[in-house]
Amino acid sequence: MQESLFDLEGRSVFVAGHRGMVGQALVRRLASEKVKLLAVQKNEVDLRRQSLVDDWFAQMRPDVVFLAAAKVGGIVANDTLRGDFIYDNLMIATNVIHAAYANAAKKLVFLGSSCIYPKFAPQPIGEDTLLTGSLEPTNEPYAIAKIAGIKLVEAYRRQYGADFISVMPTNLFGPGDNFHPEHSHVVAALIRRFHEAKTQGLPEVIVWGTGRPRREFLYVDDLADACVHLVKRYSGEAAVNIGTGEDMTIADLAERVAQTVGYAGTIKFDPSRPDGTPRKLLDVGRLTSLGWSYKTPFSEGLARAYQAYLNREIDR
Figure (tube, helix red, strand yellow):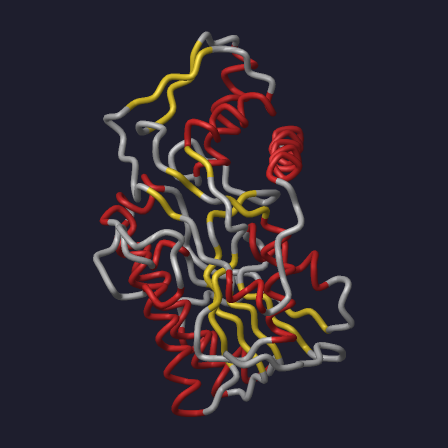
């Protein structure tokens, strides 16, 4: 592991995927840096199209790239849209990473996912457990695409000396999340489900799975802050986990979301729905050794996420 100092001031910075939850958080965070922010709409440059990506990079030549663009979703979306998830994410990673190298980007941050680790990895999960066991089957296509991106970053560092790094975020939530009833991540899905139950006066809410799996959750603006911190202070082949180092059961999560939303009915679990990985807690020792730890308490982040959902409903 190598700690370095990289000055962002005066740099042109491309946030790939600036409309997504992570991309929006990065844009918010970078507003306090003296940088020239670059972004492009999907209808202008489809990042799955190599020629379009190559042309845009050749014209704009960003100094720094945050690769936050991805096709993402919850457990159901990952399991049913398997072809979309592996194709889209492979193409995005390949095209953007290569174009960044070919156009002399000074730094690139590839955002992976904690789902890259084996389903039964020792807890907490260290970065060196990558490729030591089988993946969770429901999101294997997405995980394989993300692993390919990590290995591409690693290969370009070794062969070309590119200062590209990979970070592995834990489960994220916050403003800009996808609240789709079937395709969203668990926090967003529960916010919507409990809010609708409250407004409709429903006596109970069904939560998918047994409620026993344990998950770690990080407020998305904390992730953005960690990414900027690592751009400035880290240069190394080893990936860096980004998380809180704390987890909770899905049952506990459901209770906390219900309380935040103000739902007072009964919570029931549906064990016929998949649980996914039994536990997923990241070892954040490498990150803390580089001088960063999370700042937003879960309860505060959850309140902000719910307010973002309410604002979304008002804007419709």
